[in-house]
Image 1 (cartoon, one colour):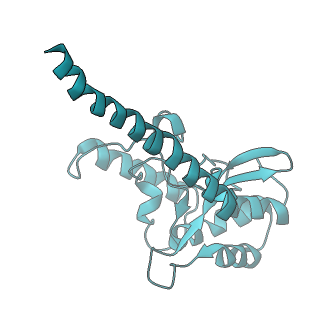
Image 2 (cartoon, rainbow, N blue to C red):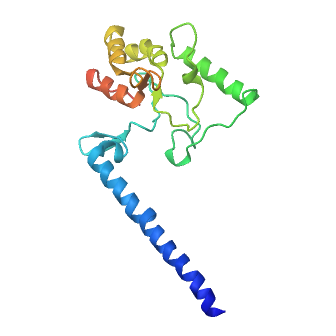
Image 3 (cartoon, helix red, strand yellow):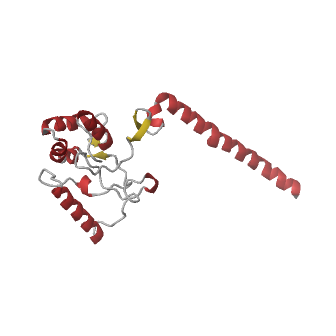
Length: 197
């Protein structure tokens, strides 16, 4: 009986070790190596650097609250923009808490001098991750007056900066037009003095 059990277990253990080596070591090492050669910036987190220091990632939103910066989508991740606690609110569409939160954000946007007929939805709702780094072009354009005023700039150069920052769908089909808030704010800091974040 012991011999039969050993005979049955031996191929299973050999297969376990072999598959662990292939799928747990060799394949990940191969994919990592190819990614490091083919697209090193993306493979390392799409980090945004300022000299030798990392200031953020193109893939993770940061909180910009100062009037001289473009504000990102609201975040429900931890205490806000916490990458270790990525999450949405999980509130139902009919939730009173959700309606109240949106009403508060709309009022805040209006108090901040939001321009345009209606406040864009992506400025008053959170994303599923709570860390969406992008805004719709409409949401970025609606903040131009506030940002220009806070920076002491005319609106035209700020509008031109937003226009240049719009990333269009891949091949005109895949994705939506979007503006990366961190990259936009970094460009803004290059053309005008920094303000409180």
